[in-house]
Length: 349
Length: 250
Ligand SMILES: Nc1ncnc2c1ncn2[C@@H]1O[C@H](COP(=O)(O)OP(=O)(O)O)[C@@H](O)[C@H]1O
Ligand SMILES: [Mg+2]
Image (cartoon, rainbow over all chains, first blue to last red; front, side):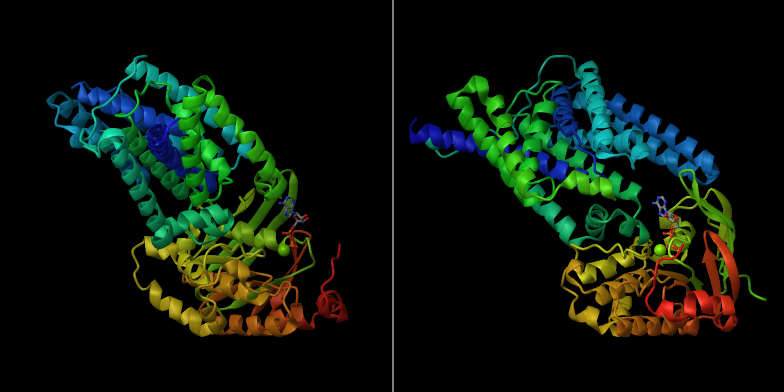
């Protein structure tokens, strides 16, 4: 192996590592706030890639049905709950606006604009508008009713949600993969030191996203409130931060991070309906390297996973997944010997 | 009694699974007064406050606060309506700074769009100067007394009408206990009603207007603080020499 190939692989590894880093951030965030190990995180990525791809073909993506259907389901659940509390009349107008009128309006906008092929930026915005609301919907339907269940139960729910979403994606997009157009196709440098514009996009957008998240958690009231919930759920409720609000916000961010990652990586890799799991799992390995609690360590771990994957696909491409997941074993062993035991501590509360 | 009570609990019942912890407790707090609840360990005092706050669901009875039935409302809504709890375990945000803990205390108000919470921060610091010195420190690094002050300060940031304190002196040195009870008395003078649970019954009754004695999930005695302090049963069980060092009783 010469330096050129090595440099190329480092670049490749950093780019995929940046995506895994975003996954890892979302996973740590969701776990810290809600104790949910969010297996379907990668589904937002594949869904965003496929939605964007479909829009670029001038067709209406199936995601519009997911958005409207999810909204109706949430509206139904919320109505039943409001009726039980005797608050139906008070809450009905807001419910209908938030979960029926807005999703339907978004879907109609997409149906109307899709055939016009208005270019990458508009299509990316539409994709975000379709997918980001799915995050809070998932929380409301699948996790919120079980907010006090154990980590294990929530994990099993995550597996179920993962299979459901993969099935829905197959129905919406079919089994064929899509690759979206690059945002721009110029190339930096020359000869063996070429860096594609998309690589720069991916890395800089990931870094920007991390910086925004950092400011959100360090400076904003809602960011602090999310951290407070992660640190002490009872304390958070006592100052008026509802577990529900925190959960919804965490899932909203997770969906936004996932969708953004999908937009970034779909020009590099062909995305299939079932690509999500692997992407999510790689992020998960990164998150575990960070002990599921530290954001910087999780990102670092994820970039490490990207590099490892890139190099192992050169030396032993058939085993690249095996190598990445095998890495988990020594790391977990080392962690369980040295670190505080997270789950046990959690059950104790 | 002219004005309606600020807090009225009627026939309050709470159960942990099948085991009942409160059997029909009635309790009132008038605006601007201090009411103490004393009783042995395991009597259900913590359970009572948790139920009033909405942390634990009721299995019977109701809670009215400021003239509204709040029995079915969530903790967050009760906070927004002016009910605050300083829990037995403090429940601070250990890995956030002292100042962030206080700011988050005003979360419900900030969310409503009130922008004067920053001024409140200064008045909390004026009351607890030690918190100001430690404003940038993590809450987890504070001493026991400072943690209690932070917990009270955080609760005050919500501008409660009724502040409920669960054993504020738990684990604190006598001198700090006295300081904290002194602050509690001052708070009442600013118009905040207080519902106080305290192992040190003598000190608690000294600053209280009314008192309740809770035993095995029921109100055994109630009356003005002076009546209770002179009641032979109270003297024997709670004000005797034994109460100087709180002991577990059955
Ligand atoms: N989480 C719990 N699960 C089951 N029983 C509990 C729980 N918390 C308290 N209890 C029981 O309820 C009763 C009242 O407890 P508590 O309210 O903590 O009393 P106090 O604060 O007066 O010491 C006790 O018998 C206690 O064992
Ligand atoms: Mg107690």
